[in-house]
Length: 196
Image (tube, rainbow, N blue to C red; front, side, top):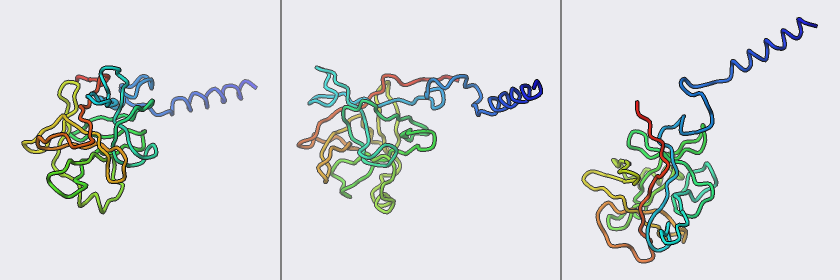
């Protein structure tokens, strides 16, 4: 009987010892310990998008079932998606096995209209034609910026796309706010900063 008890305890110890862990991580209480800088992105601006008067937070979200690629948008999301920047690329962290890049697309293939922000690649053939290459994402304090060459913008727009859904757009060069669009900036007020 004692041998069986000892064997059972040994197996339990071996099982617990075999649970994977990452060096330096002592707790699973925060995803920020695994992905430095992970955050949700809050929209702040006039005209009801993250309106400071009532401050009903609105967040960058995705027009697709959770974990799937889709157009970026902004709305009141009780469980906003998480994002982080790595090597000047903005990423959407869905879970440990699904991390999607955030791209900027010229969905109209013209130079005067705003560029659309898309999470993941819904249609690889279309993405190849419309993807805007050479852009960088970065933080300026709490504010998210998109840069390409000499052009840089912290200003985003919530506009209806060709399907009538609200999408997230930006201009690389200064332009008047398009009719029916709401301008705003994106901020992270809870971004975890790590210093080595």
